[in-house]
Image: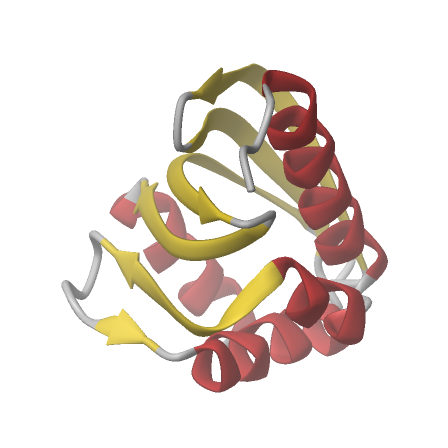
Length: 130
């Protein structure tokens, strides 16, 4: 099956929308069961289940999540997205995170996601939740 430019953009939007809504099942539906997710801040690969645990925690902890997409471009085998995640914290504060994902897609499902996060902003979230 060949994924088109339109398919890649639609998958990216469906994926981000599911995260914004905190819909872990819809996020899972975007992933291939054997997908791997990597983050630059720890250098480790996550399985889909490990990633969904983190996203579930985010949905329970960050009262709202909004992705301001700065750039979204289809690639021949996936997409790249630069965004700012904005979230409301339980203490009434707000938090932002600049990030970029490079995503590889096969047969309409995400098989690999490499996410580059601003580690200083990740640390600020940990401090705010402590």
